Amino acid sequence: MIYNLLLPFVDEYALANLARYHTFRAGAACLTALLISLVFGSAIINWLRGFQRGGQPIREDGPARHIIEKKGTPTMGGVLILLGMVGSTLLWADLRNGFVWAVLFITCGYGALGFADDWLKVTKRNTKGVSSRMKLLVQAGLGLVAAIWITWLMPGALSDKLAFPIFKELLLPLGILFPLLAALVMMGASNAVNLTDGLDGLAIVPVMIAATVFALIAYLVGNRVFADYLQLHYVPGTGELAVFCAALVGAALGFLWFNAPPAAVFMGDTGSLSLGGALGGLAVATKHEIVLAIVGGLFVVETVSVIIQVFWFKRTGRRVFLMAPLHHHFEKKGWAEPTIVIRFWIIAMILALVGLSTLKIR
Image 1 (cartoon, helix red, strand yellow):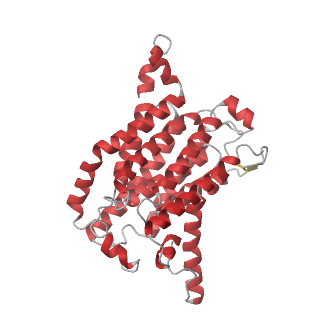
Image 2: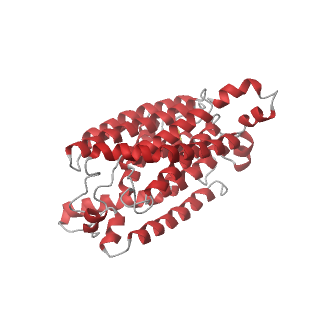
Image 3: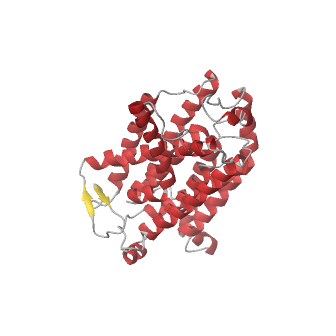
């Protein structure tokens, strides 16, 4: 909005001219989202606590200490993240850019699904919420719409092809199957972040790390000069997504202020499903779907641990891990929560660096 309002004056006023630069607006979006989160955080938490009557229901089969330490903590803190992220994006992004609206669509759509899931949990006082089948159907529908939208916005030479990191000229033509793959990427990323969100601060920092990486990727892929220099696939218009990524980071920082141990609020499915969907949408829009699996490798490992656990238990009646997802396994082994969280953060940072290295290794 601010960009669109200032655009007619960029040639007359130096301050207005700053709005032309993605870097300036990304920084402003990050600070704005952080400020929104900090200003409204306490009020939103009090609102959530007021109607939840006991906070987020705690799994009885989970680590025993959770029933004692986390009981009464309100959930649905993703509302705070979405408020800062969406509000700041609308203020600082170019609202004529289709990629911005497509990524906002998948983010808010998955956020609404997560909100419904959290609402059922806190009002019915159980941990089930929306049925798994219904959740997957809604995710698939929203993901397919977003995938078709993003595909339509892309240059024809790239719209239905899967790009590979390192191999600069390798593009796998998928035709009408590409939107299905893209929807699967968004669904997978959404559910992977959801599975990782189990300890205070565990999911939000890796999400920030991944969003920072994709802010850089979006900026480079959307800039013809940098894309040609690094031999990346140039996607006009995706540079604007750097503003969205920065807003995501700022909102996540504001949420972390309240989510730092001991958490005053949990993000819930409202936050985890929307943030994962946002990362998936960013990866599809920038043609870096496979790089997301590297940068978000922590989310992948957490998801794989659940798949292995369920598969092996159904097949043999025995467990591979003491408990899944993987962070609960280490809890059962006696690791302190801060130890698990910080070590997982370190792993996320290492994977982000590996993902970034693919931009140069061609």
